[in-house]
Length: 86
Image 1 (cartoon, rainbow, N blue to C red):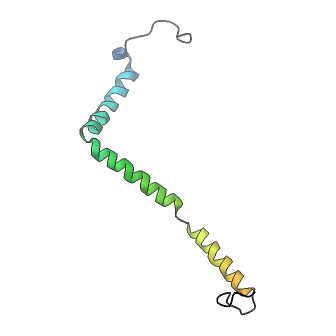
Image 2 (cartoon, helix red, strand yellow; image 1 turned 30 degrees about the vertical axis):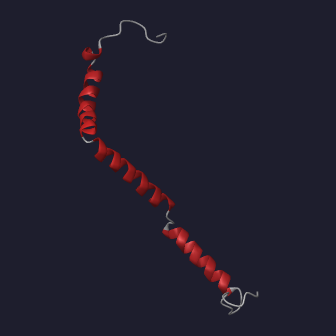
Image 3 (cartoon, rainbow, N blue to C red; image 1 turned 135 degrees about the vertical axis):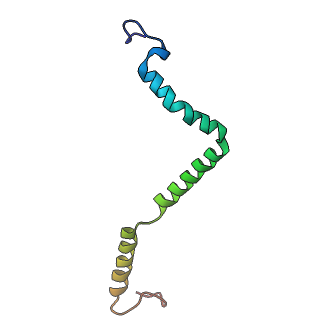
């Protein structure tokens, strides 16, 4: 209350509060009417986001392929599989 000076008007008279309430009320009503659908949608969104963020990108896969190609070509014809000796 130290930073507020002057008269504080009622919430219903403030145009910003009225607009925010008018915009927010239908959202809250929908969420309460369809709460399980909203919960399922939120969980699915989190799972899909985690799956997408943890999956390797094309660039990462390309780097891995280049690394394996260089690794196997350094052994002068040796494929790098099988005998275990370098």
